[in-house]
Amino acid sequence: MSDESTPWMRLLRELFGDDAEAALEELERMGMDPDALAASAGLSASPAMMEHVLSQIRGLIAQSTGEDVNWSLAHDVARGVASQGGDPSVSAAVASSHRQAVSRAELWLDAVTDFDPVRLEPRVWSRAEWVEATVPTWRTLAGPVAVSVSHALGGLLEGAVDAPPVDGGIDPSALLRSVSPTVCGMHLGQAAGEMAREAFGATDLGIPLLAEPRVVMIPKAIADFASGLDVDEDAVRAFLALREAAHVRLFAAAPWLPGQLHTLIERYAQGITIDLDALEDAVRDAGLGDPARLQKALNRGIFQSQHSDEQKATLESIETLLALIEGWVDDVTMRAAAPHLPDIGALREMMRRRRAAGGPAEGTFANLLDLELRPRRMRDASSMWAALHSRLGSEGRDEVWSHPDLLPTSEDLGAWQAWVEAYVTRGTGDDMDRELERLLGSEDA
Image 1: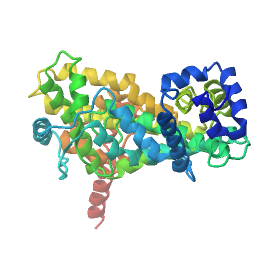
Image 2: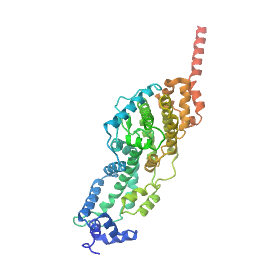
Image 3: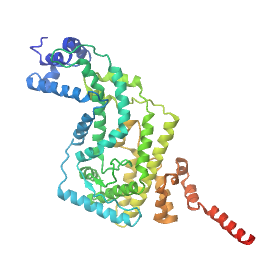
Image 4: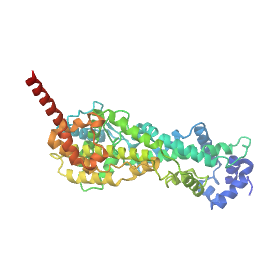
């Protein structure tokens, strides 16, 4: 098989120099037919296409040099995944209808909570715009774990090829060093892109994905979601606008809350360890020649299944805080929508089930951080907030968010009726003691 007769061999020669024949044998051992691959890719008929492939490979190597994760590739993959199936630009008419829905939602919320609306103008975005705005948060939350995976993967690949570059060719060792940053960049980009396809706004998971509290709506996702329901799209839009605006009001009124959520997630992520045997199995099954297959293999459980006691406690804190957030949003949204949306009961139950069951969005986060962002006990939390509203009104209910120490713990939420009673009557005994001391002091005088 000569270089002159086989474009695929010329590509291998460019990549692996004198080791090209050995690389070809390895591909065939893995069950690949290089000639068929070259033909299907158009390399046989188009030398220009082969040069394009080589330039792309060179570019990946250049991008990954000195990086643990190819963040530029993560961004590009996220944009590509988000645009699958169409991602039209938001027209002025569509943007206007969604801003009107937000304006109505804010008015309805004014009647049921004392938390003020944010002053920042709401945004109506395409999925691509969502990606651009949220990637920095993805990098903060998932970056440390991605770096750990990249280091572990790089260690497995180290020394897999030890051959000098040919004149004018690609250094094989540099190519392999670029694999782990490339794969991890693809992995992060895939997750962010899939989230973009599902997101209605910037708070769907109960975690703010923007640096500033702002209401965001994604018309394409909302329309796709509404098309599968027996509810008018305007009602669905109004309901989702209410939920997004309620989340944003809460995060703005309790400025400590976003930071605490991010800190808990980062603390949990710091304790994650990589299962090297599982990672090695993934590498072996996927092969080194296909970063896309290797990236998909990372979804098959490469994290250690055993959590430390500290991780378990942190996970419980995350789940409890998410339940409290979702429960408050659920209660406030129900009260705000009840006079205006006849289908609020069905919409509320649908959203509860969606959050409890989890979906692709939660699944992608689990793949990245081995973390399921499900607000367990959300129904208990919603009932707790409703009971507080009944006893103390909206102001007394919302005062609980004034400091993290006022919030119930996971154990408290498991017995929320007792916690509500204790919270409502808190300080009563102390007040009586002080009054008695005042009276006794007066008599002594």
